[in-house]
Image 1 (tube, rainbow, N blue to C red):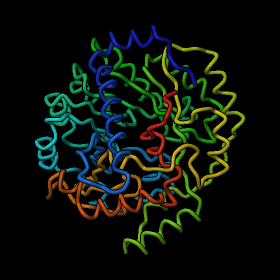
Image 2: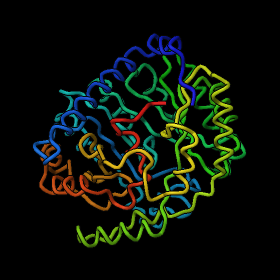
Image 3: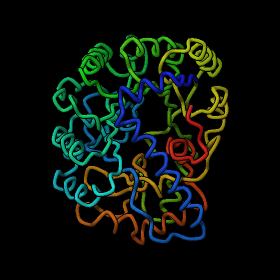
Image 4: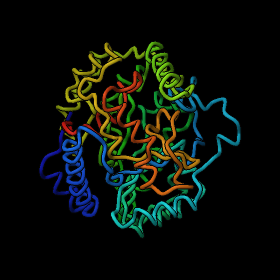
Length: 388
């Protein structure tokens, strides 16, 4: 993948001074946390407060993307009740959370569902600005124009927008008319006097691997700052069955979240490698990256779904707290079958160091669950990861 030049990094510092300083500070915070974890390998003492909070603001979504593990063709929420579908994180719970954590200014990931459907999103944007906490908004991009007032002049909101191909391919995967609307909204917010940092999340699919280069080029034409090539998260039936058996045996829970991830991944790996080489030669003035250290590593990712190419330790459990729309704290937002407390009823510190969470960490230290091999957090929170 192409890493931008030093000149481009300098330009980013001038364009987004607060955000770039935050990235340096964040790296140092993570480094200290990893050091702490290495010194406490034998057991879990009182864990320092989370550095990151991932909030599922709502499970509702305005799209029905074919491949989505939540609302797609095989999504686990597709048959949910109306009440469940439209549940959202209580505003009083969010305010209570900020009262507890704002003194050390963690960062946030705002997700869903579609986070811009959250009824108090504009209020949350103001709260983040007042607390000087950065938040990554993971959005499909359809509602950006609706929240343009909250976007203007708020340097603490970073937008990661899903775009999965050129117009024809993207709309096949995500719905007719989605591409034009998202491109319009990206151009709209990037035309602001103080435009926000915008990244594109491109999820690699069999249908779009051949237009990867062209999609990146179109994103650059929209003046985005970054393109992240996400790998599809998929499970074999065997992995899903092993996970189900483990939770039934060790936690007396019958999970269902794994069903949305069961799929094959018939990706043309040679085409992916060709597309990456073409991108590298283009030397565009933005970063285009993937969790893979080398494009050729896609072969191992496809052929051995039961193992992670780089990391087999879930550092995330000592770094990030995941919160569901009902306030439950789950060790994994993708597989929210376990809950170790509720921040609407208990303090963050109490939940983070609860006996249930501590016992879970003791288990996960020794061996990951069968479904964990494809988890993006093993890449994102790997202390040895090389950022491409």
